[in-house]
Image 1 (cartoon, rainbow, N blue to C red):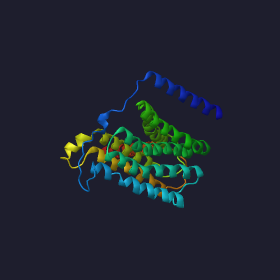
Image 2: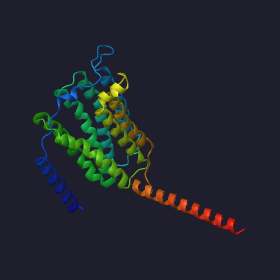
Image 3: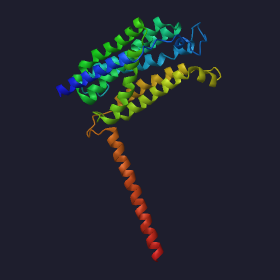
Image 4: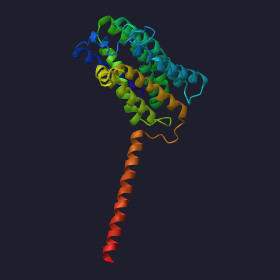
Length: 286
């Protein structure tokens, strides 16, 4: 097992180095800061809706963190407590970092918008390793993963290159749903991971369609504001999952569950068709 981990990390590092060599730098576009909705709706707050739409992150982040500390969630491993605590701290901090950025969007403030999100992303990766692969490996990976996220932001800020940050943000978006589907879970209610991933994907679509949505809604709400609200649904679903789940007696992956369900559906259809054939045969002979 140790040799496999060594080879796995070695392959990952080699792939990363090759990607950094063969791919061009990705500078931060200044158009990113040009959001569709720049209205001051009340209290003189610039970009009002983009600022106040971060409030749900604070609420759900604090609720989740308190419930973690109180032991209200089914967390059977110590590493899970640390991982989920880091996640909810990151979620709560998004409210402050993103609000600060949207008051006056620029690169310097964008650092504080991305930093807490990165903490949340990397914590989730560590949590998945703890729950699905190995507790010790996952627990020891919390700090390195969080540091990797912080380094990716610093690298972007000092070298104006988003490649590292893009890896930190988008690799979990691919790996986490795959792990949720393919690796047998320790707990029930694993489907909530897919709901969370779906809302995050929807949030990214809304972010990309910021100005289009603002036009579609006749300047009522922009895509970026909706992005905040959809992204806040990710920790909401994960909190619900933590509150509802229990230890999974039969550790079967979602993929295996879907296969079993599909086989049963096919069998039931086949039996139904067989009964129809028998009924038809009897009817024609009488």
